[in-house]
Length: 294
Image (cartoon, rainbow, N blue to C red; front, side, top):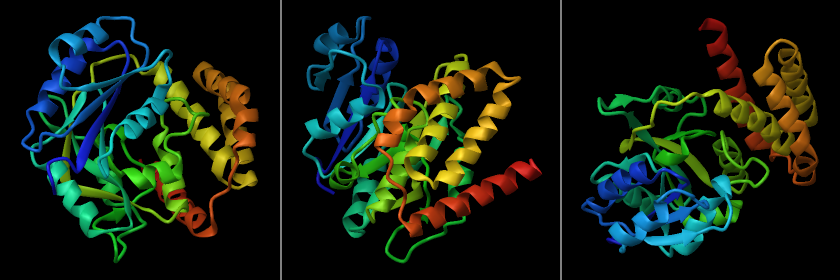
């Protein structure tokens, strides 16, 4: 890898103290990656902090909150062949970006790499690591890891050209559980999406209520079904959520938000090609089996 083959994009909003910690970690890496911070119209001291303490960081200032789409603004601002995503509470282990770049260099079909994520000061493995590592999609001969159709955005590295080819994160979803749709779109374009445990990311999320995120994740899972999955599947998932909505106010809110965005989702609907739909169904079956035994 060359020093500038991997850049880092951070989308942030009103998280100045956490952002400062993350930037110090990233700027201290031996790889010395270029870093782009996309500010989603923060109203706290974020912009003053960046100008005062991090003049070496490129800043893209958005006039309004674009959610996950802000990452695409960051990708376009970079000219490195590979882009690592961090959130304002996550960063990369020393050597991780170099290893990721070597894997991309050696595997031309590799579009996205999902890292092994360590959480908090105790470096506890994220439970998602095991889910990804045991994906029933298995390996591919021309890819360096287990094939997946889901990942954690703040612990992922993309080939810039593949990300832009797939269209990046989707505007209908805005934010929350947006990763599966991007994985679908990369796979539909022929790009490989894998989990690679030898590339390490650190994630230090602040404790916070999860109710809002639960609603958006449920909403976006259903919108993803309408955007890419067969109509019978999307209808069945809608009936499931409607059934939950009778007694669960969070499900009711998720359903209401889905219906509000459904016209836009239907206009952007593009069903997966057969081979990717088969892979998605394989993962659905595995998730159902895990849920039944949990």
